[in-house]
Image (cartoon, rainbow over all chains, first blue to last red):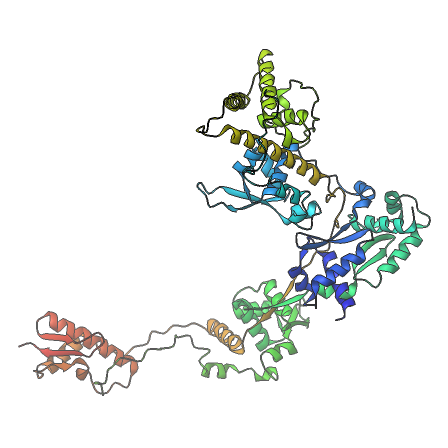
Length: 189
Length: 189
Length: 253
């Protein structure tokens, strides 16, 4: 099969799929092709200027509309529910610290995590239980899902906004960095 | 808005819509454009060689996968299965008595034949409807197919062993075979 | 603390502090807002000033007889302790080190602030269902499975045989079977044993002509039971070297 035929088959399969497809899913349907990742990148490039884009999210491929056309489309589709501040914050803590336990989320946020918050994030398909930490009490850990990456248009967790800066500043560590200056300031004198 | 922008908006709207869209629907979502039918035809033409096609059906526009790629979307897998006892028996009755009606099969087997059993045999390609019997009620008759002969390596139905052959081969025995020789020892001679 | 999951209005950080306890998500949230009002860069905030602001806030709340949640009071007590520890001459023995505690508090504030900003940055990204849209009704991919039946000709013929056998007219005739009755077997074995002084295989006492299989089975069974019966009556002894070894029998004097 020529590359053109392979590209046609790939685009038809990704287009018809009900959920984003992994490389293995695509290979199962179109058969083994020379370089599937390369073909997918070519296809994505050819769609980039169009109103429909082919995108990779968390290792899975899907078609979606171009972000700049949202105003044409919002009336077509049901609006999504807005997340509460607590839910957004909890989602951010999980995404930037995963895998993370509930006590750790509570420590970072300074308040108890209400049961509903994690439920909402799991029901949205963005957060999943990710095994137990092998420490006393074996607390359950939470992590994000490929659906989270897809929803927020992230290719991978490395694309999380500001991830590298936060890591460099030590703000994703459990303990404050030692070399931080003593924050006494001059207010006490 | 340029033609390119109009094309992008049109393709995004048709792509994301929950059902095929009429010209009026499209115009409502992308706004009034110079010549919408012309733009749609251009767009359809640009998609024609691809794996996804833009098509008009009854005045409504939609994307669909190219018809020649259907085999990628529904690949066939073969799975080895065992026929149920009821199906094997029904097949045997049809093979020995064809053309045979369903009431006759039931009479010979002594139990009711479910429609599903005949369906399985027809799906397997071994049994076919063979016209109606010209008796009251005109019941449908069943017979075997060339595929049946091929699968069982029979040149014709006359190759099926007769009742006498079956009896000689022990296939008509009601009594369980004696497998244990008498333990008479060697002192019995 | 009110934690509705949807549609909680985002509130702006006030430039002047307004007493509105219900709107804070706990003491750390309050501290962060106070710190934010103090300095834009949390790395440079004054912890002592922050402590004073927090304590003043709590004092005002008490003056207004507002119900203070326990965790706000716990934080106030802790901050008062931290302040006094920081102001005392450094005690190398102090455990935990107040400077470490201040560092930790600053770190917590910075981390919470970073997570708030990260959440806002996430929400600012193009989102599915708001900015980008997948297909509403994809056809779906399926694997169709075609069954391959591995039925053999033997299966076919055997099942036809089974049907025919089932439907054959089932008249059951009880056949008279040639049998050796137990009494007859005891009588016969006792007579034969009378002449055997040595151990002899039981099989040797079976009749020689056993062409009829069912009669042979009957003779074998009856003779064995007869041997057991004679032993019980003390007229014979039985012996067997090993399981399934030949059974030996002799007369008892």
